[in-house]
Length: 146
Image (tube, rainbow, N blue to C red; front, side, top):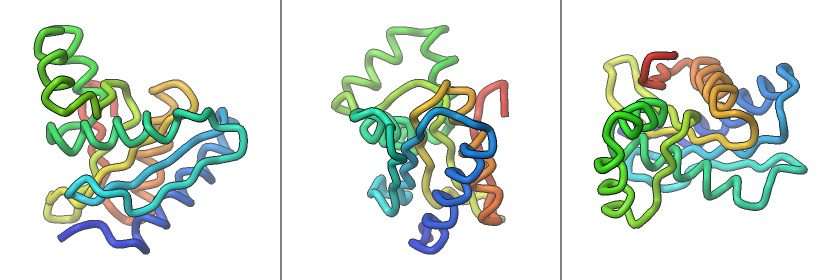
């Protein structure tokens, strides 16, 4: 099973609503299905021109490795050679910074991932988790901070 368009749209809208509540910088939010395809994406006015690619890279890396992008960042700090290898293996398609969060169903199966870029990685992650949970799904940010 994979994320539906209705679920992905709900996540994106809830995430952007939370970003405005927290007065974050303009955000770009992307939801990928469990095969890495874009299901839904929105870019707020004023969000930088490469934010879409960064958001996709955060979500893609989370899906590819099976853990949130925060975990990838933490592991990269411990083993930079591993990060270099997985970046090369992915064709440079992953971004090891918080804001890539796995979406899981009640049975803990991965349905897809959210990637967000626009504010700090920590703030991106906070609103990604909030958006996923607002849609009634489980957020898996990974790492030591959830």
